[in-house]
Amino acid sequence: MISRGVLRRIKVSATESLRDLRPKPDDILLVTVKSHDTAQAAEELGAIYGSGTTVVSLQNAIRNEEFLANRFERVYGGLVEFGANYLSPGVVEYTRGNLLALGKFPEGVDTVAERIASDLMAAGFRVYCHPRIMRLKWWKLAFNVNNALLALLGCWLQQAQSDPETYPLMAEVMSETLLVLRKANIHPEAPPGFPPIEESIDTLRRGDFAREHDLPPDRRSYPSMWQDLKWFRKTTEADALNGEIVELGKKYGVPTPLNALLLQLAHEAVRNQQQPGKYTTQEIAKLFRQAQGG
Image (cartoon, rainbow, N blue to C red; front, side):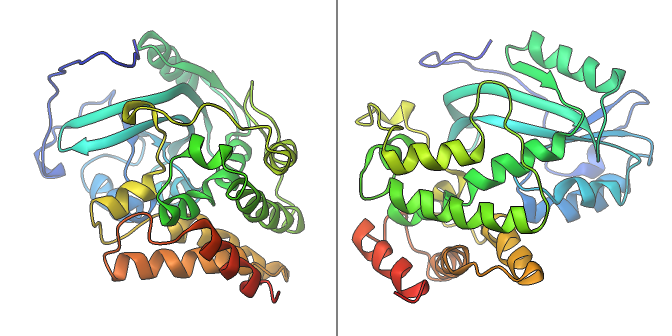
């Protein structure tokens, strides 16, 4: 079961090279790498496993399933709605949530998805299957576009949702993103127990997400991009998140100055090896106004 505040030592079989794997006929592959590594993972896995192998993408962004489908015939999408912090190699700190959603790619639910869901529920997750899983992943992306913002500000989710200078900025980025999705005829759908994007934007603007935020480190939900900067990684998922919206905006004629700005700043942060928190909220707000021509 998933639990917070409990130290668990788990012995797992691991390898540093996929070439060490010995495939079995009933293997199911769970792909959890960052989006920028999916294409390479698909190629390496495809060199070892047959095209009929079942592959599940438990990743943010929405192009991972397409990459995997180039090599595998049985691909499933997965929505991940829980948080954890990477502390050091082999040490992960669980912070919040335990929801997973599964479905066939590009759509549908079958007995395989239901069996995987059953196994994950037995492990302590709250899991359900959805026939249009990509709609849920678009919903998640509309929130993930703020990952770069929080990383640049150096704050965690609960803190950002409770700061009257920060949550309006989050609402602006999500509102811009929603305009693009509507123009592209994309229909995000919230999982059970979560509000639609429009309602979340209104809630942010009113400040109704405000909650206890002076939390101990093991309860703070940092976006993965914050952790990328913290550990001086050479890439982030900004291209797969903000970059996705920028490209869709170009295609459908919708301006995306805020997503483009966050993408630019994320690239600069990686290039210059900046730690999280380089910018204040006031500095970001000024850059937002400039980007919007104000």
